[in-house]
Every structure is written in structure tokens, then in C-alpha cells.
Image 1 (cartoon, rainbow, N blue to C red):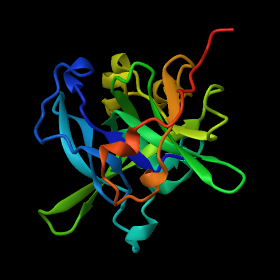
Image 2 (image 1 turned 120 degrees about the vertical axis):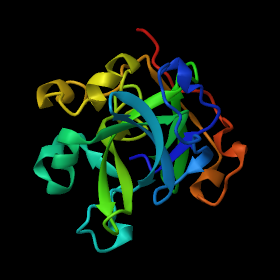
Image 3 (image 1 turned 90 degrees about the vertical axis):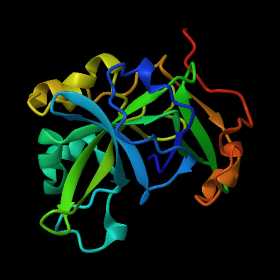
Image 4 (image 1 turned 180 degrees about the vertical axis):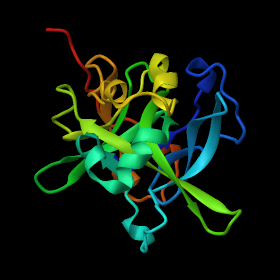
Length: 225
């Protein structure tokens, strides 16, 4: 499952023309969990870009290292940590791509998954709020994962859910019913995503060079039969 994000050179106005950029976009070629990440939420009927801590931290969580950075779509309604947030507090994480690791005989090969035209993607997520005092709080998030589609299943069995731009309001609106939400928790369309191998430098989250995303092989993408 995704443990790193690629967030660079995003033109969010292409996806969300009415976005209110209340905070600058957090960019990184190799963004790891336990770090701030930019998320889009719906506040008072407006889309707002704001930083969240990547790793869901409900008030009762005692060990920060146990904060999950992903939640499985199939069990969202079975775990108290996720069910309330999924029903009322959803967001999207805008990215230019995300990394997965293909298991090989003696190592793991990292791949960068992107839109086939290298455009931005909106990854479905949920969020929660932890009050540290009566007035101070921290908001945190976890991506939602679904089974990988047939095209990319040779690399990994799980991928983040991709929210289509036309479904953004439906996804973010807290009044959307669960049936409509569950209809969005599907593997990405075969023709939407591609993936190419990248340098193993990305294995180290301290490595923040743009070379993390340089292809070292051809893109794996869906070809019509």
C-alpha cells in the first residue's frame, strides 16, 4: 500500500477551479507519513486547501507511531477509528503521483503511479481532530485504499482510491449518504493510471531530490485488447 506521495508542480485550478488556497501547497518529491500534507476540505460550502498531519490521530491514540496512514475501504464501517470520520469528515489529498513497491526475488522495486497524462490526482481520505487544549487542535488524515485494478495488480494489491473531479462535492459533502459514498470506493479505471519504475533512492524518506521520480524503465499502462 502507498507509503509515499509525490506532490510537485500541481495545477489545482484544473481540477478545482473554485479552490480557496488558504495555505500554500506542501510540495515534496518523496512525502512520507508522519509529515504535514495538503488536503482539500469543504468548509462553509467552499473548497479549502489546508495542511493536515498524515497519520490519523484520534484523541485516545497513545503512541504516535501507531497512527495509521491508510484505511482499507472494506473495513471502514467496522472500525471505530474510521467509521465516524468516514461518515462525516472526508477530504482529498491532491498529488502528482504516489509510490508503490513491487516485491521481487531479493528486493522491492519502487514504482511511481501517476495519471497517464501526468495530470493531478485527488486521493480520497478521511480526517479527525484532536484538541490539545480548549482552543488548540491538530487535524490529521489517512488515505483510503481499495483493491488495485487489473492493470496495476502485478505491482501491488492495494492502491489509494481516486476521487473523480466531478464527484468532489459529493465526496466532501458531510450529508452524502453512505450508499453514494461506497459507490466511489472502487478501483481506478484501467485507462486512468500508469506506473513506471524509479530509483531506489526513494526508499529513504530523507531523499528529497526530484530524481526520486525519474523513470528508470517504461510506463506500465493499460493497452486495449
